[in-house]
Length: 190
Ligand code: 5GP
Image (cartoon, rainbow, N blue to C red; front, side, top):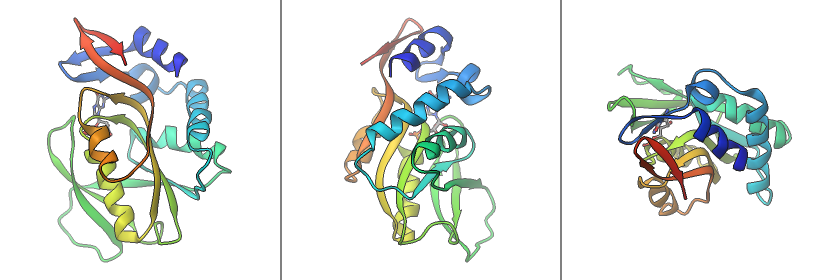
């Protein structure tokens, strides 16, 4: 998506060898007009899929997921919660996920009330790195008996293995911008 790539070049900051900071439009302040266009682009990419629910993970995926939902006939958006509690709760599906940016593990949970075997799910997230967050969401869908129709990502770092990890699970992955590598603190797209 050309406009997204231009925005990343203009406002993105490479803050570590493998981390891009895009707080000015995606992860802290939200550019609503750009999000709207991203939502429309996700609809185009998954136009042939019957989707009745969008699943994302708190917090940065929520805004994008909500905008996308508008283009999928206003289907409900469910966001996975990140919990540290060790108390087991019968009412949730849960799975362990490794956080790429925080380098720790958390328990990803979703209520059994909001995910079921009737659901055809589009998973949405802001970044794809090693694929842990998206794989966690796929695992939650499997527990619920829901069908994963695809994974939609805003920014994929193509030099990390996330796409291979997800495609190995038989899932269609669509990313709006794919970064090939960082060169001297600059983003280079595929
Ligand atoms: P993965 O689970 O695929 O390894 O990493 C994806 C998750 O880590 C995303 O939900 C995102 O929050 C975070 N993440 C991974 N890489 C980056 C990055 O370069 N920049 C930012 N802002 N978040 C990232």
